[in-house]
Length: 265
Image (cartoon, rainbow, N blue to C red):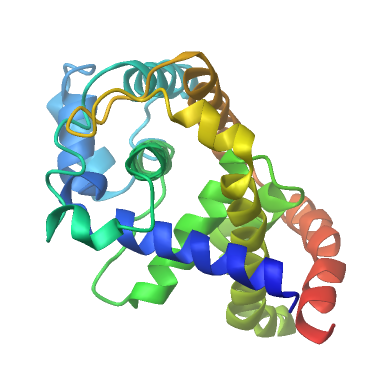
C-alpha cells in the first residue's frame, strides 16, 4: 500500500475509533425508534411493532419515513444535540490530541445521523452482542462511504446489508464474497475518507464549528456538507427497501472488479 494511503487509512480509523468511544455518538435502536416514532405516530401498537420488527414491516408509509428522515437531517445539521461532545469523552481531550476537536465533532454527528437513518429505514441494531468491534466499524464505514459520495459505496452497502442480499448470499456460492470483501472495500473507503479529511478544504469547512463543548455543526460549508451527506444516505436506504434479486445481481457485478483490485493488487 502507498505510504500516503496507509497514513490516510490510519487517520480515518483513528477518528472513527475515537468518535465511537464518545457515549453521545452511539444510538440505542429501541430507544431511538420509541422516541422518534412515538412522537409522530399515535398508534402505540404500530410503534411497538416497528421496534420488534422494523418500521416498514409495521406498516409505516415510505413518505412518512422520508419526512421523519428529513427532520432528523435538519436536526443533526442545525441544533446543539451534540452538546458536551468532547467534554463527554472518556479521558477528555488527551484521547484525541492528534485529531482536531471540530473534526471529531463533524464525524461524531455523521456517525450518529447514520445510525438514526438506518434504524428508521428498517436496519437492525449496529453493535449487537454477536458483532465484534471491527465488524461494527466496517458497517459504519459503509454508511460513511455513501455519505461522502464514494464511488460504488451505495452498491456495496446494498450488497452487504440488505435482507435480499443476505438471502442470495445464503443460497449461493457468493457467500464467500462476504467478510473478506467487506474488509477490503471498507479499507479502501477509509483511505479515501482519510484523504478527504487531510485536505485543507475539509479542515477549513469544519473549523467553523462552535465551541468544542457545543458540538454543534454550524457555518456555511459544514452545514451544507452534513446536509448533503444525510440526504445521500437516506436516498440509498430508501431505495434498498425495494431491493430485488435483479438489483443485487447488478450491484454484485458492479463491485466485483473493485473487490479483485483491492484484494490482489
